[in-house]
Length: 202
Image (cartoon, rainbow, N blue to C red; front, side):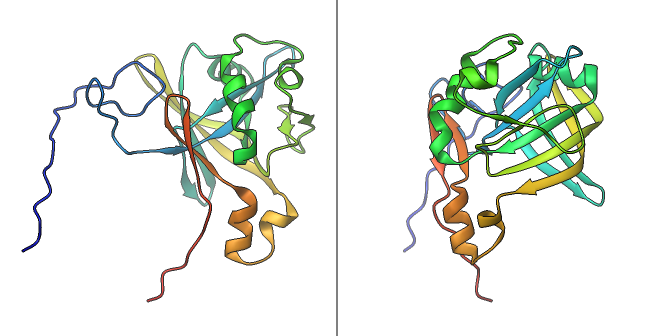
């Protein structure tokens, strides 16, 4: 006889304000819905660069290419994008985990912020917001539209240009993802790494 699995049901009217976990359905119950960790780079009107980790992110359309992510309205990331209409989504590997968390600790626009956390800014092709050289792929985006929910905002960007490390674009599926070491946010100060890729045989 198949063993019955006990389920716990929670009525959800909102999520805990603790940004460390998404979503929190109880005091110590963390729902297993994870997001890829990326670094979003922006500039303010004075062209001062900013970098911030985000994990509430996804692709929403392919033609045109639209990417979107969730952000707090009070964050420099949101303010900069609403002011300049552009941003870059940088795809880091697991080797940058400590620097990603360090980026989350820095508040405000600082001229040498990217350098301060040990990363290198690289000029973008289409926009003023810089790319991060140590990241393995980049999406240069123009602001398309936004949707607000309380203090949160979902920012949708139209991808103007995509760049990717040659090693991440060539070779077998397994080799590409082994190189990328894509990182996901699991919980406060916790992350996961995609270490292998497999194809389904139908």
